[in-house]
Image 1 (cartoon, rainbow, N blue to C red):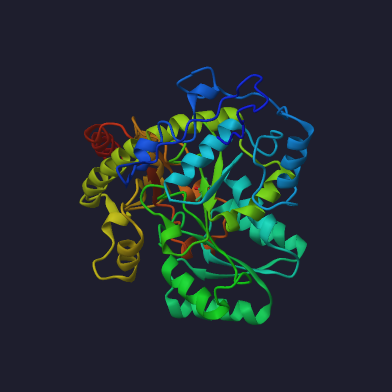
Image 2: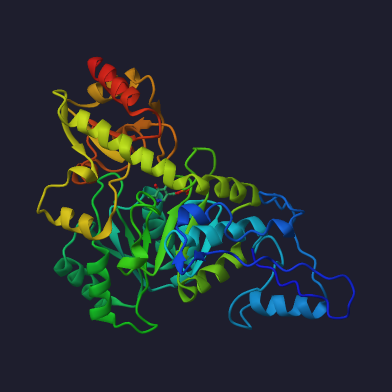
Length: 438
Ligand SMILES: *Cc1c(COP(=O)(O)O)cnc(C)c1O
C-alpha cells in the first residue's frame, strides 16, 4: 500500500508514515509464504487493525491542490511512474495495491495489476497492445474465451492472428514467427501453458530465443505474454524463462475457494505501464471486496497448492492402473526423454492438480462416472479447495467443431478433473466407487 504522508513540517498534526516492509532478514530474502501475511500493509495506517479493512470508497481526498495535480500527472502519464498515491477507485485502492504487491512477490515481479476477472486481464492486455492491421502470434489451443476474443472480437477491428501448436519445437516457432513478421507488425506473442484441456506445455525459453533472434531485444520487439493459470504462481514462474507479462485467472488456484472471480498480470514496470494505463481508462480493476478475499487466499496459497498437488499425484497413480481407464493425461506422467518432459524439467516445479482422465468407452461411460462421484462435484472450473469433475466435450467445449475437438483430444470419454485439498484416501475411494458404476 503506497502512502506518501509526510511529517507535517509546520509543526501541526504529525502524520503517520508507513512502517518499512521487512522483506529480508540477515541478507536472506523472505519467502513468499512468509510475505503473504503482512507485505505491503502497515496496521498503524488503519487504526492498528491486524488485517486490512475493506476500503469501500469511490474516491480519495487529496492533502492539497498541488498533491492532486501531481497525482493526475502520474495517472495521465504526463510524468512517468504512475500515481504516487490514491486518487479514484477506477485507478486503484488500498486493498488492490496490497494484493498487487503480494501477487508480484511469487514471481519476483517488479509490478503487478489485478482485474475483475481473468478475461478482464487478458482483454485489457490485448486492448493495450494491439491496433488494426497487427498480428498476434499465439500458441494453440487457448482458453475458449481467449480464442474468441483474439479470433472473433479483435478480428472485427482488423487484427489478425497466426498460431503454432503448444508443444512446438524451436524450428516450428521460428517458421510461424517468421511468416508473421513477413506479413505485418507482430504486436504480441501470446502463450498459454499448459494448454487447456490437452495439458501440452509451451517451451517459453524457445519462444523467447526465437523472438530475440527474429526481432531483436529492442523496444519494438513483440512482448511475450503467457496465461499461467494452471501452474502458477507456485509451480511455474515464466518471467524467469523469458516471458514479459504473466497473466492469471485468479479465480482458480490463487483465489482457490471457488468463491470469487478475478484476474492478474505481473511483469516489469515497463511491461505493466501500458496495461495500467488501459485499465485506468476502461476500469477493469478488481473490486475491494474480491481483493480482500484474495489477500486471505494468498496466505494459504502454498499450503493449498502443495496439498492439492500431492493429492493429485496419489489419485493419478491409482487411476493409471485401473482396468476401466484408457490413459491419464497428467504432467507427472510425461514420457521420459520426450520433448514435453524436457520442457517440464526446464519450466515447472510441480505437475499441478488438474488433469485429463480418458475412460475406456464414450459419453455413456464418462457420464456414468461423473454421475456416480460422491465427493467430487460435477462443475467446470479448477483450482478450488474441492475436487471438481466435468466432461469437456459435452460442456466447456460443446460448441467446438468436431474435427477440432478430435485434434485437441477432446473426445466423449474425456473427464477433466481438478483435485482439491480433501483427504487423498477419500478421493481415491470416491474414484474407485464411481468407476464401479461405469
Ligand atoms: C478460467 C480461465 C481463464 C478466464 O478466467 P476468468 O477468471 O473466468 O475470467 C483464462 N485462462 C485460463 C487458462 C482459465 O482457466
